Image (cartoon, rainbow over all chains, first blue to last red; front, side, top):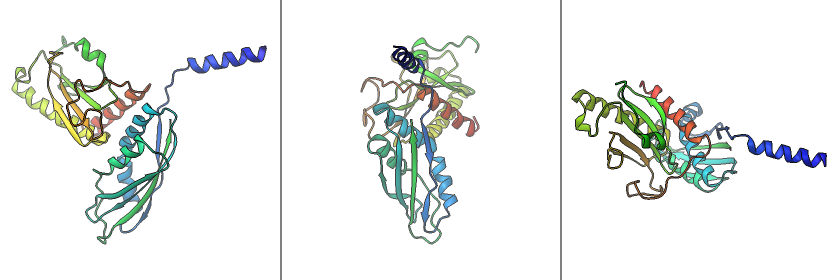
Length: 126
Length: 138
């Protein structure tokens, strides 16, 4: 009986607490293959942080429990634009929205004029 | 302009982001779109009611808000509009539109009901946008 009362009390306490945590989006270290320094790519990715955050928060409106790792891969072409953007790990709004972010991102042009392959992870936690 | 008072409808539908030199920047409480509202702290209904210097400042602040919004959220197009058919107090909408948003390609007004943000999410977005304004020198 005491145990039951304790469980009821714990449950009601949990529901009473407001949810003030802001969803977390962490950008993992990128893997960069080609004519751009990893730090350069990292800086450009970091400038997109608020957009990645927005994408995740939009997804949470539909599925409040989604969490995990969104793996992103793309190519930086000779103009500095991103191309062939792909995502795996999580489907839906956050993936589509994240891919869209790269439509407008500009990286420095690769030094050798050849494509640069980039992979990184977004670590999502509600 | 100490007698400035935000219209009650704008007060209810938006939350504060930052105060610029002419306008109060507000975030619309509609998660369907990233949507700013700039309210000049003047007694005015139309842009032409503003002094010429305020008109120029409004344009600068609209451009600044557009840049901050576009840097903060995914955006295929910015919609900038001053309607005022329902709320006469002069205010300017700056809306980040996406090709997959629920109203695209039509205007946002009347398209779909407003969608509530998750708890604390609108406030967090407002803080990020405010930081964007501060970083831009405003």
